[in-house]
Length: 155
Image 1 (cartoon, rainbow, N blue to C red):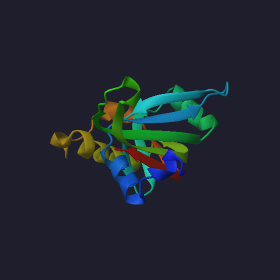
Image 2 (image 1 turned 120 degrees about the horizontal axis):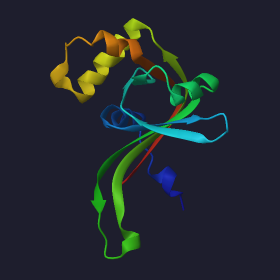
Image 3 (image 1 turned 180 degrees about the horizontal axis):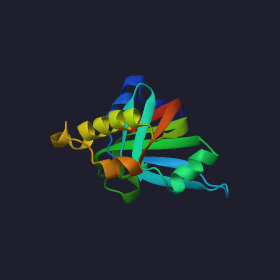
Image 4 (image 1 turned 180 degrees about the vertical axis):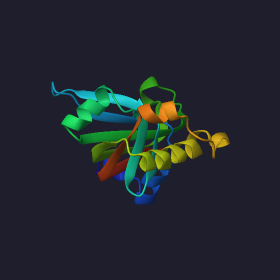
């Protein structure tokens, strides 16, 4: 009998679709105490890189500077599969797990590119608007170069 995870693998195109459509991802960094630190984030995926915006300073970025090895997960919930027994109830979903190396940049052109992509994904009504200087000063971009990615589904 084939293990469930291998039986329900997403194709490369399906993985990319999840990364394009999921609205929240979870970035896992490793703290100096060796424990994972997971942060829910908005993100975009382009050309084998996951981009996240946020404050240039903070715990997550400190951890990335110390150890750039990260994992990232995103999922699309597609509904509940009801069943007569509680243990047989499940969720219809597609999920992706990524392993990669993260870096942080404060470079203006990269920030503008990524912020434009984020606006297009999350708030398209604001496409073409200028980002305030004060917000740009404190914003940094995390780029995760994808080294490996897997995806699974359940229907």
